[in-house]
Amino acid sequence: MYDRGWSGLKNGELLQVASESFDVFLTADQNLPYQQKLSGYGIRVVVLAAVTNRVVDLTPLLAQALRVAAELEVGQVEVVRAE
Image (cartoon, rainbow, N blue to C red):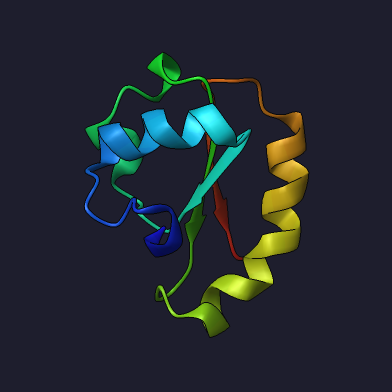
């Protein structure tokens, strides 16, 4: 985010800008689906729900997140939790 100049963007702005360059938005913000109407953005959203937002806890969810993302339609959101 920092190298693209997106660090100051709020969720709605960030989703809009991300949808212009990416197909999938991965986030650890578990409140995002409740704060934004995600169907209004042209992007798939995968929420990584781990014990903490530390990389060591999020990394094991990535393979599952990629599988889920491949099946989502634009505007859909799915939460990925540890199995």
